[in-house]
Each structure stands twice: as C-alpha cells, then as structure tokens.
Image 1 (cartoon, one colour):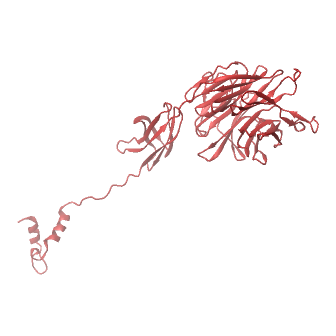
Image 2 (cartoon, helix red, strand yellow; image 1 turned 30 degrees about the vertical axis):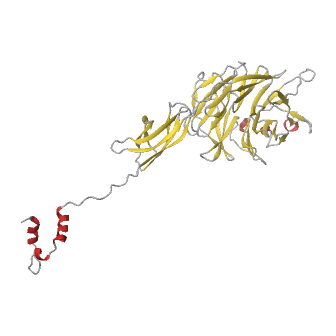
Image 3 (cartoon, rainbow, N blue to C red; image 1 turned 60 degrees about the vertical axis):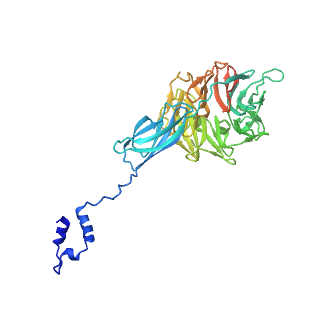
Length: 462
C-alpha cells in the first residue's frame, strides 16, 4: 500500500468510519501538497532606486565640464567616467552633485561620456551623453597703424567699435591750428567713418571742475573712457558725462565730478549704466536718476565688466582695483550686487591688477602683472601664466568676443591673442609706447594708446 492510502486509512472519523469511505481525496491531496512540497518564493526583490545622472555643463576647445548627480547612493563612492567607452577619469565623490572636469580634448570634436559606479558586485551605469568642443579661431590678422598729435604729448585712452565704418576713440590729442601753430586746446574725441579720422572737442562746464573759470565758461577735459551700445547710444566721460543720441552730444550732471573723470564705463543699457573711477568711486544711472554706490575702499578702480548669467538670471558685474603706485601691494576684486558691494576672493592675483573680462561660469580673466584666469568665479584660486610664457610686460586690458577669441594688450605695444588652444604674440609696426585699451567686433579689433608723444590707433582685420 502506498503512503497516501496508508495515511488515509489511518484516519478515523467520529462515527467510526474510515477516511477512505467519507473523505474526498482531492481536498486532502491539496493539504498534503502544502505539507510535503516546499512553497515557491514569489516575493519580488526590492527595487534598485539608485540613480546616476550625467549632464553636459560646458566646453571649451580642449575641456569639458560635466555634472554628475546621484540618488540613494551612500557617500563617499567611487565613479568611473568613460569617454568614448574608454576610462577617462576615476574619482572619489563626497557630494551628490559634482562638476567633473575633463581635459586634453581636441577642438571641434564630439565625444560620448558615461559614468559608472565602480563597484563590481553592485554596478550602476548612468545615462550616456554627447558633448562637442568649441572650434578654434584664427590668429591671422592684418594690422594698420594710425598716429595722432602734432605737438606736446598726445594719448588715446579708450575705443569703441560700432562697425568697421564707425569707430570712436577718446583721449587728448594736440593738433596745430589753421596757421600751423600749436593749438593749446586739445581734442578729446576722434571718429573714424571708414576712410578718415575726424577730431572732436566735447566741452565741459568749466566752473564745476575749475573754480577759477567764470560762471559761463566752458572748458575741455581729457576723455578717459567710452562705452557704446549702438550708433545712437554712446557714453563718454570727459569732465562731464556725455551721451550721444545719434545726432548730438548732451552733457549729464551726474552725482559729482568723479563720474565725469571715470576710468571705465559699463552698462547693460542706458537705463542701467555704471561709471567707475579713482578712490573707489562708483556711480549708477538708471535712465532718470544718478546714485553713488559706496565701494568701501579708496583704491582706484581700473576696470569694470559685466555680463548676463543665464544660470542666475542676473547680470554679473565685477571690478578690479589697485593702487596707482604698483609698488604698493593692495588690490581688490569687487562684485556689484544691487546697490551693495561684495569683496571677492583674490587668492593668486598679483599685486597689480588692471583689467577684467569674463563670460559668466565659463571663463574669467584678470590682467596686470601677468594673465590670470579661472573657470568659475567660486573656484578657490586664480591661475597665472608666468612672465614670458604669454606676455613679458605689464598688461593693461583684456577683452574677448568668446572664450576662444581673447586679446590682451599692454606695455611696449604688446598684443597677444588666444584662439581657444594657444596664445599668439603679434609683431606690430611699433615696438615702444603702450596700448591701454582694446575693443573687438566680428572680424575687427582696434587697440589704442600712445607711441612716443603721439596717440596711436592700431586696427586689425581678420
């Protein structure tokens, strides 16, 4: 007899009958199945809620910045970054949101990137992304030189390009009069129409700046800086603040004499424009009213630059300050936030700083005693090219059209260009004097300064 019949035959009911006589075999069989056969495990394993997300942040000609975000992964952890399926970097991460820097890339090339959790027992891949590096720009420019001044010491301080047939430069230019005699009244503006340069005098209200002048006397002051939004919206500081509306120049009183002798101007529009000068002077014009902004310092402001930061949705406005006497060590880097000033980290900057240019969260440059740069403003340290690597002398101005098209000019008529991968030093027709300012527009670059006792304009075309 089999096991099941034996078991069933041994079961007795209350009335004395056997199970075989009164039980239905099928229900008993199901019961015994649970007893004699193991129950199947149908429980689903817990879901893997870990996640790695890779996104593209930015790229230059030779570098890429990627953002790696993690979810439900214990810190710290090790991640592998792959470039075109090859390991590019292995990093230890202590944050769930990290910017990863990849260098030694080639210009104008598309790469694929992917991140992986390095654990062999518990691997986890991220999504795959593509990133294309920037192309380089050309170093090839053809330069033409113009000199101005027939007596005394002439100099040009600043320049603004509207287009190749509309260029403005400012300074103090001493010319002879109609009889060929030295004219003591200098010109403070010159304008290029595509063929010729025309000298112009913007007259200031003399009594404000020179008390010995009569109440109705108009004088002339050197023009230190110019800023142009377009051909019908140009600003100059020359004793007074002057605005050109496309037809005529008009004087603005401002908040005091300092804004008329500003060293630099920057603005997002004519209803949001800043004038910065010596002794920490900053003045803001909102299209109707002038307001002085306290800088908290008496250092001289040599440059101001701003640009729109797409990530923050605000304009980022920075200033560099130093002493006129470069033997002194004091310098500052300031940021304008509304009507207040924030002092920024200047670790790594040389004693002398004279100019700043940047694209927000892409690249920042400060020049003076050396060329300093960093990728992001909150990076802890300014990196510097040692003297002789790019420039050998004091640099006075840096300007760019993009991070792969940057010019630096300075003493001994030095002009250098960065095309995204390399710096190039130009051989200009003059080798002495200095360039104090530069502007770039499309395939045109114009730098100004002095050569001997003359003002000089050097115009380069790509």
